[in-house]
Image (cartoon, rainbow, N blue to C red):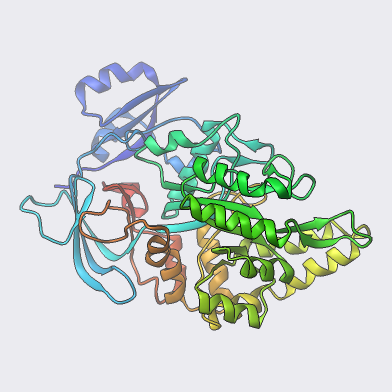
Length: 446
Ligand SMILES: [Zn+2]
């Protein structure tokens, strides 16, 4: 019999009694509230506690459940059935999670829980910033809320596209069973006065190769650079390159020496052209690629992350320069107007795309589904978007999807996301390390 899991708030007064009479999976005392998990609705009712959904917490809200702490609840075996999409070619009808690992062999033990639907490998946001706020690195409480907001949308693997390591860092998340997996780019590298304040590490061009090596060693095999930004020292300020070609090429070579890959923020055509010329692996935003550059990126397998939500912000970013930087304003406005056509053209040209929300200072966490919907709005077929947001991205980042022995990190939908991206908003179940952590099923039954 599947047990049930509820998250509830509780006054301390009744707790000792409650713990004696009912079995709780986990209890954490934080301030005045206790966050409990119940194993049935009846128990919840008998205790008189009101249901408490984690996602209702404000940013930085308090309270931890047993699931967040990684304490195992009674779902040793989950049977996932229906359409299990391994990748674009392979589909099976059943897969099991046994003690947090996937297997295609039916276990001898009966399943504690059966979830039916369309199963895909956990979603991948390749461009977000967990641990980052407007003033730089945020305290763990806030980073935790960001990570949870992302996880509950089905994002179980995130490439962190740049975050300071001081005075806080997010390494502690690696030890948390409830947290999505993170692949860090270290702190992104820019030049003084050539990027948003407090976020990037300022580096002079001559120091770029050394800085890339340092960030590669501090991160998880990726380094993020800022390739173009407004240059206010120009007679007519506009987007302009941050680095000379030789230093950027040297930085790429240095990254290779330490086994790291490089991704780069580029808005302009000049930025995209330079990134291709100097051998970068991946382009963030990539609004400036024209047809010739798209053909080159496609031929060489250079990845582009269109960041559609961020593109939506280009109009207001441009408006900030009104009257002061007319050339820059016009440039951003043109990129804004072309945002959908250009994204579709990237797909049609065969550029391998990845999905990145750019949740950071101007975009709240938990909006990955919006990013997916905007890609669809641009005219990219749902099937291609699912691949880019799931198995293809996992393969690219070197993290297993649905395979024998892999961590049970999957999302289950009631309908096929390859047919309509609308289903992403309402997962049946988000399963992380073999535990149902979110989705309709998590709200009622575990
Ligand atoms: Zn970003």
